[in-house]
Length: 59
Length: 430
Image (cartoon, rainbow over the protein chains, first blue to last red):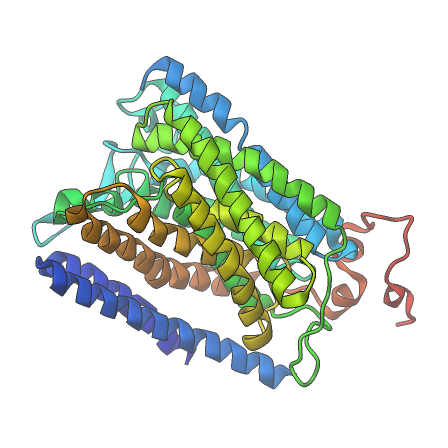
């Protein structure tokens, strides 16, 4: 789960970079950048959840 | 930059160690008494290592606007990724700037990276060993900080968004992102790796309150931090944004207002929720106000600075509670919420409160979002990967004996307050 979290964080960032390079219309850019950040948030949630599970199981 | 401005910049920079001193007092005051000396020792070592590593390695990677850089050409755009100036202070690091300007720049990076590198110390308090603190600080000041400092302040791709892609560029005048979010994300990574303090959570995963040992030092640290913040914000606005020295007056007023509103917001919210204002949370609210306000300190109006600080303070309480109670993240000094959380809000608030035309407002929001996405999507994985690898080589967490004795006795051989016997468990037979 940690690895997937890492990958999603990086994927979100790459979506944002690709958006800057490939899209020019403001609303398209806004949508894709928002999607990239949403992907990152999911990645962060997965990473957090994996550490949360570790804590719970350590108790 | 004129020589008068350089001297002014240097004088302002001499205030910035007060921010480090302030945060150090806050970190050690919110930790346990049995690890107080260790916390201060960690700060001193971090600052020393940051200074040496920054001069030897970091300053070259951080670079400066118009200096040499490693670029990648994609889609007809040169993405400026990393500074490529000489590592020797006497040579081309100074580039086209005068020698004095180069030294002032290096001086700023030393204090800024030192401040950022010591933010995680509060989060890892009472269990993060001194040797990995030093190793982690060296990597942070040598590679992590210079990378983001170059992107935002050194003419890197984030500072050139408007040139290459139209619209607006990412704005972070006082380092809400470069210093605070980077430090806050490092704190998150450290807490994930070292886990909670012994006794913090019960077997049912219920949180136990471990109050800070010296709230007087914490509150005094807030006052010191204000002075240091003003110095650092003023210096970065002069050096990286070429603002007129008269803007320093705006920065001073905005810093005081955002910190005040951050603190008062916490006082009011804790009074309403707990029927008494919470001193340690209020101190964190003061710092959160400073952090959030630093992103647009030279551009926004005093009213906007007040609103930024108040929102940062209000959000802080819920963020700290959520991390501690729901996610089982033991962050004794609230570093993650104060620095990373408030920093993100500060970067967003710049887009809404900077006085630009309506046609540029949307572009500025996008630019700030790209910056935040970079912190979350690149800096966090990078920082965490570096710390995970380092943890394999130099274990971060102290052993079980150290957990029981406290870091002062375990690592330094003597406590910070030898005349007081506070923890009976230190004297239990083994």
